[in-house]
Image (cartoon, rainbow, N blue to C red):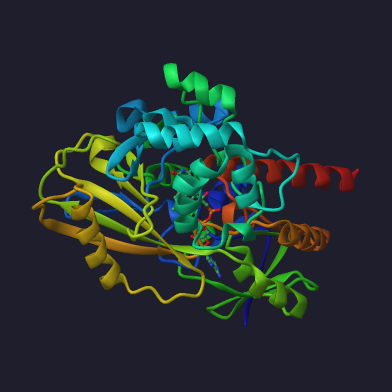
Length: 428
Ligand SMILES: Cc1cc2nc3c(=O)[nH]c(=O)nc-3n(C[C@H](O)[C@H](O)[C@H](O)COP(=O)(O)OP(=O)(O)OC[C@H]3O[C@@H](n4cnc5c(N)ncnc54)[C@H](O)[C@@H]3O)c2cc1C
């Protein structure tokens, strides 16, 4: 067996792994299972259409990160958009978030929502996500939108999720904000403005890659085993690589299976998540809709969200992504879903006699991890055990959480700084 040694061994060449390498600068090695870099931030270019692995838009809370992004892509290669999104509710478009825009509903439904919002029973702490929704927004808002929409997205009973399952990405609003929004639209959501590269989300990943030493990024090489006692991993190509620090970015459930520890395997099987089938569709002509994306709570429609690249990139042919949620172990019949999707797009009047010119399907598995308190406690415990033997698991899937691309980059940078400090402390 061929053997080698490296200081930082990084598993996965998605945005998290590449960002860690960018900080490490030298003495690192990235091993990537696929034949290309990018992970879930990959872009597909086909028959004149540009599609991502579902819509991947850049929004920033960190000014330094935003500056770096703009410098890397350059202004002329970027589009800057103020979000224009709607909920498609009973054939009518309601501004998103639904809970902030109940005044746009027919009068009877508006009164129902307002009445239940006023009479809701708020608690300090909720047992689960669904309880939190009822407690904060009242029955009508939840039953009309928040429950059916999130059930389609997460593909699970919302009682299985932690009250904070979506963290800062959930559009919370109190009565005062909801009432004020009736007169003046005040969208202050995390992605009210976003940036998007004209060549697709992968442009930023490619720019990071250009900074790195290509010899240190090995593609088509899955890791199949971790030996945490002797600090080495084995690859599918029969190599043994010793490390000082192991930085994992692959989904935590799959990572746990690389160890011999049976406790890890048992926990891995318990972890819950959904899969998302993404259908990227390119049509022969444009549509009348001007939104960037729309939310579909109707339980008789197979998709929960659809997006319009043509409206973001100002193109004249309808170019869409369609997202459909499934439970974790379900076999997805892509052909059936495509047929159903085209039928439903017609039903919702998104398309009429449009001709499908090109399409691509992708299964994101996992897509949204199901966060609950019990699993979080065990996750923290395992991560602490791993840290003791210089193993770190980060990123949206490595960390098993809900976060953005920016969060992944910042976490990778922070981890590099943390390890650096530990090294200095140990050496002095
Ligand atoms: C439907 C959806 C929409 C999203 N939209 C947005 C958005 O608009 N904006 C935003 O900021 N974020 C968005 N996200 C989140 C974003 O996709 C993630 O935060 C980010 O891509 C995570 O990157 P990562 O590098 O941590 O993981 P990944 O991209 O999953 O990278 C992990 C890499 O590890 C590789 N790998 C797997 N197994 C092995 C193995 N055994 N050995 C070696 N390599 C392996 C994989 O091939 C992959 O390249 C969205 C997510 C979803 C599901």
